[in-house]
Image (tube, rainbow, N blue to C red; front, side):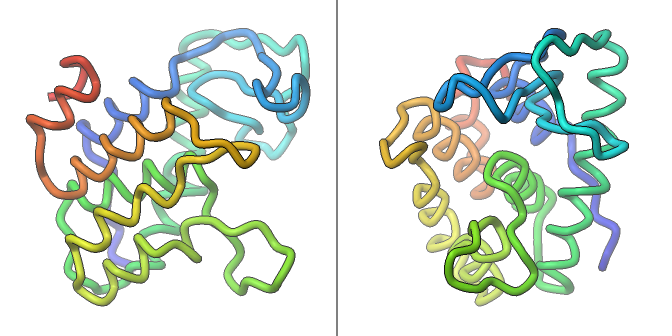
Length: 178
């Protein structure tokens, strides 16, 4: 592990797509679990699941997001990419992807949910095939078996960040991330 940190552009990208919600809301696909609060969190730093009716402050949302992002996502992505050459933008984009799709199990078996560790993004990055890694972000654009326009835009923005194309990131986020 190299102790990479998520930079401000990747954080701004995640904030743009997550929105900070101070009251828990139901998953749009299920109408229930998993409930989400803060910056897209389905659980709290102590492991408790977010429940219907939960409320937090803006400061708590920010603090919980920082803790969860570092502990449960950035460190795992960092360990997965190891010593592979990685720019700050590439790292941030991969953490943003992992935060949205999950990190996935260390060892995947049939029937288990896949995540970042099983992604073509990671495989192509480790192989030094950076253009292919950027293209592979588009493999994660469905929810409930349907292609979702918001996920397409999010993956396009993550791929642009990964590639260092900040003009495209700005276009896809309507200028929110530059």
